[in-house]
Length: 103
Image (cartoon, rainbow, N blue to C red):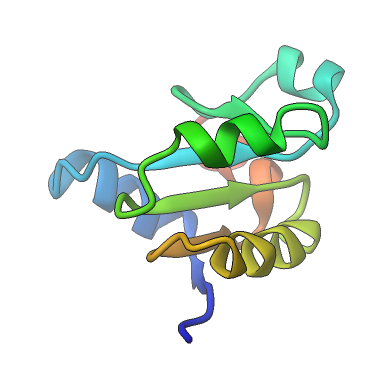
C-alpha cells in the first residue's frame, strides 16, 4: 500500500502551472479560515462532507491536503490514502506557506 507524500508550495505551483496537472485540493481548516482565504479550487473538507467528498472525487487524480501549517494534513492525507486515493500529498507549511508565497 502506498503512503502519502510531502509536497512543497513550489512543487504544487509547478504541478498546477508548468505541468498543467489537474490537482484536487482538500483544505481541512475551519470554515471561517477557509472563507478568509484558500487556494483556488480548494474544497473545504470536514467531517460533515467527508463521505460525499470521497464518493464524488476522482481517486486517480492527485489530491493535495492543506491545513494551517502542514501538520494536521499529514493525518488526513494518510486517512485518504487508506480510502483508496492513489496520489495523496500533504502540503508542507500548509496554507500559511502558500499564502506567504503568493502575496
